[in-house]
Image (cartoon, rainbow, N blue to C red; front, side, top):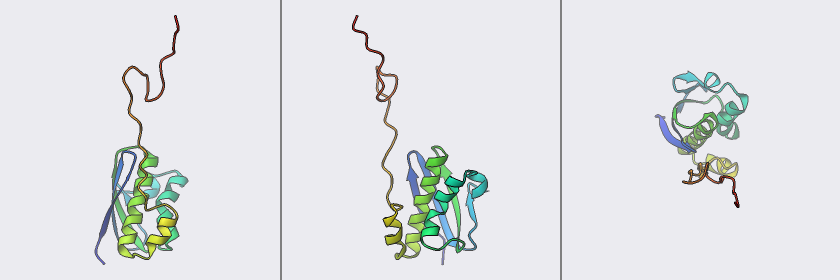
Length: 128
């Protein structure tokens, strides 16, 4: 099996995922994923597609991720890994789709409007 690559996005994060047969080594931006994501919840998000498909420890992944915050990056990687696993075996698609891992989350930050301090917040109204 050759290297399978996939793209994952979330908010403003973009993750390029390269999946190959291996021993379960996960490298994110040339660092181990446990060092890159010190929080257990984020590590769990990255591992989730492997846990659902019972493939933890069967594939090595190399990820280049940029933009956004740590949560957006973790979720972008999760989508990229899910897409790469589906390319390897189409049988995984139903498992991953049932958990909502094949869907690109469309929610983005709303833009700031002129004459307002933030996107929805307004300055205090004064009648007089």
